[in-house]
Length: 255
Image (cartoon, rainbow, N blue to C red; front, top):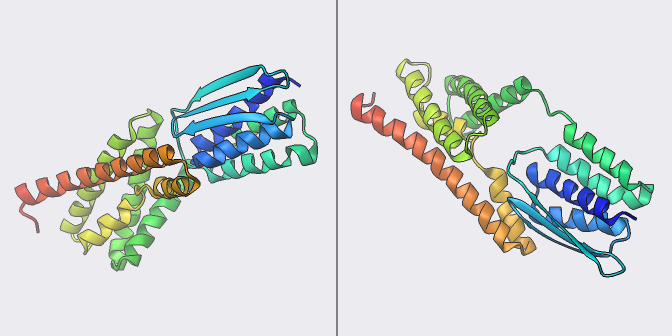
C-alpha cells in the first residue's frame, strides 16, 4: 500500500468537492471514507473554504501530511455527486488506487453544460422570478434579456479571475442601469420587480445554505467564512445597484 498515493488521491477528491460548491464536512467525510477504504484508519483532515489539510499515519506510526490550497470555486453539483458515489463504491467494487485516480481525473475533466445553454437557462430563471414577484409579461421579457446579458458578462469576467465582489458589484450596477433604461423607454413597467428578478441570478443562495449546513455539522470556522462570503456578495450587489439608482435619480430626476 502506497500511503502517499492514497493521501494525494483522497485530497484530490476533497478538492474537487470543495471547488464545486460542496460543504466542508462533506469534504472531510469523503477524505476519511477513501482512506478507510484503502486500509488507512488513522486519518485526520481539517478543511476550510480555501484549503485542505490532511494527515495520515501508517501501521508503523509514520505520519504523512499534505496541504492543498483552493483558490477557485464554482458550482457544479454533478461533480460532487460523482465523487460521493466513487468514494462509497471503492471498497464494494474493489477499485485500486490507480483506478480511483483515473476516475477522479475523468470527473475533473468532465465538461459542464455549454455556456449558451447555461446563459439561456439563467435568463429564463430571471424572467420567471420577475413574473413570480408580480411583474408584467413585458417585465418578464425585459428581465430575460437583462439576465442573458448579465450571465454573459459575469462569465466573461470570471474567465479573467476577477474578484467575485467586483463581479457582483458590476453585475448589480449593470442590472439597475439596463432596467432603468428599458423602463424609461417604455419596454418595462415595474423597476423594482425587474431589478429583483434579474438580481436573483447573483444571490449567493448556495453559500448561505452551506453556511447553515456547516454550522449544523459543527464546522463553525467554515460556516463563518461562508456566511461572510455571502454577506460580501450581497453588499457588492446592493452597492452596485444603489450607485446606479442614486446617479440616475440625482442627475436625470427619475421618470
